[in-house]
Length: 271
DNA sequence: ACATTGACCTGGGAGC
DNA sequence: TGCTCCCAGGTCAATG
Image (cartoon, rainbow, N blue to C red; front, side, top):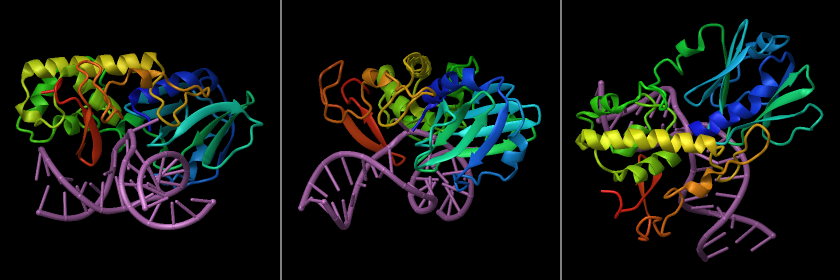
């Protein structure tokens, strides 16, 4: 469920309760996630202090002196900070209990999330080391994206959702950024002009930044670390709005499938 | 190297 | 009510 703004929102929500805290215990109820939860996790984390919390792409990195826990929320995962007396419910797969009396609870109905451990630099981990630049960094700019796009026949929307090209642009914000840039999602990436890429890069950055400011997008079940929803849903121009009027021109929003993903756009505003 | 497709898993909503 | 079908915010592996 979460894209970059939702992961960033989660990070901000939990950080005050996690960073500088010592892990008292870990309860793992389900190991069968996207990747098996390693048996070393409990022994590695117990009695250790969380030194810092970072985000890379949609991964959250919990650094300790002995290594790093790598967490991904998948499609339906969320993290909440709760009082350690709150009973667990269905799909609450992992609890990280702190000496403070709080716990960090990972819930993930679809089990596409992951929880891993590494003793090395997590940025060198095989799931992370091949990833493209952060969308909000200077490294992600017009020249970069234009150069990478040459000779590529993929639809532009599929292209910007490829994490080797740029991370953090998921199905919602890909549609939204393309709407803002006035680019039809099905255009071939290699046939788009430098000027259009300039606009697209700008819109990807602004739509993600605005979504972070609003606490992400809550469609069904996204909540920040304190159980509050995100308010960016109100700002969505096309996502999930098939047959509704375009906010700019009033014509009906269309839905198509690209790379097996629902894609929303306005055929009048996006050429 | 690039493009496309299937796979993982559960729940919710639409339609009958 | 209850069944079936389709959809869902991600991303890796396998296949041309």
